[in-house]
Length: 254
Image 1 (cartoon, one colour):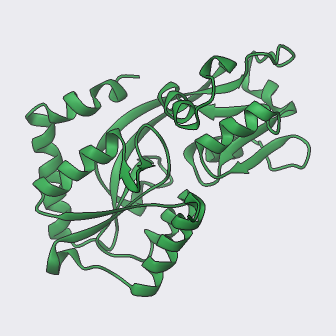
Image 2: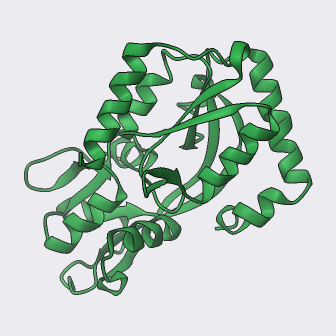
């Protein structure tokens, strides 16, 4: 059986090789996400998760058939530049990304903390700058990695930013001492920790970071305008009838 990283890469290459799916013609739409519990996770060969189930309802209400694929986050972002009829979630809405997507609707609000192993009593953080002395695992091109980079944190062989593939890998590396810190929201921490099977009591939040991210479902700029209108109308109706609050309300209140 191929591992999940192999499956992600296979999906990415297949998407590039076999070309575009035109939602305007056959109502199919490609949906990209990373392996990021609780929002998106591969279980028994199927992509599931809290936001994933909402995305399925969103697509159905818009009259679309979603083809949901998990892949490396950097690769997913790159594909949004070239593919039509494509959704991506959950993606942080930032000033830098504002003009790169059509923003369909918010899925969650994430406050961010540095997490460490509870046993690492030597790590005492009182401000962001204190973290510069440590190895920090962060997903490349993720809003958290971008925030740290913008604040002067750099990749380094000793301390600094270290690329990880996803939140689960970050916690595994934290557990075995390969990194010292990782930036996560409480929900992302809980989801990733439960998915790895690690004892969540081994970790604790060490410092809140001045980063609050609005996490959205967004569409590529090449998605047909008529499809964008259908998706935005579908999102509005899911909010109006209480579906959003029932499925994702707790994630929007951090």
